[in-house]
Length: 103
Image 1: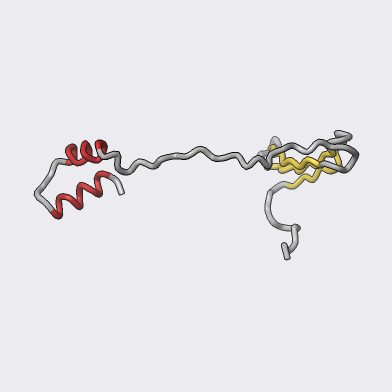
Image 2: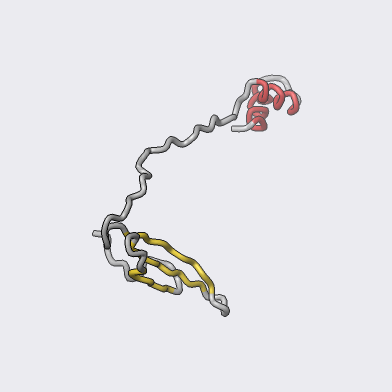
């Protein structure tokens, strides 16, 4: 609820009041302000260091477009130890087809 809605309630219950006065009182009382909190870090963002091949893989989506305007989505899978690209899957449109049932 903002100061305009509060003004509507006040004018229904009491004598007519100027909107500017309602807004001034609203600001002085610091109503309608949301206190924003910083996100806490969980500490789980420790990067794994690859110790041997096939120990840590990286997955990334790359979006691109062709000259004719069609969109491409490329999924790349890379081994962190050997820095070898294990797979490149290209699809013209992202979606859930071909993924199968999650159960």
